[in-house]
Amino acid sequence: VRLVESGGGLVQAGGALRLACKASGSTFISFALGWFRQAPGKEREFVAAISWGGQNTDYADSVKGRLTRSRDNAENTVGHQKNRLKPEDTAVYYCAAAPDYTDYSRRDVVYMYWGPGTQVTVSS
Image (tube, rainbow, N blue to C red; front, side):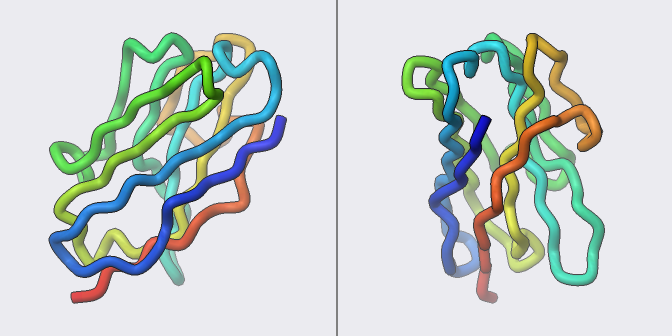
């Protein structure tokens, strides 16, 4: 399984970005998908997750109310719209997948597959 993130870039505080993660493989529908981020000098942290069926989502408190997730199983893609960006949102954002109908989780060890990451920089 290969995951590739897209949509990162430089944005001013208060702006918005849409990140996407596209997965290879025919079993995408069985994947729970998570987004994590890592800022310079900090540990990787959970951002959001969506269940393999797409009915359930979970968001970190730091992004709740500013982020919405969606998935398109036909296109093997999950999207992540982030609004009202803040400088503290600056980080490399990673998409991760847990296969075989695993429950989504905030724990990164649950996710077997990871994308290379995409940089998001928010200027003040």
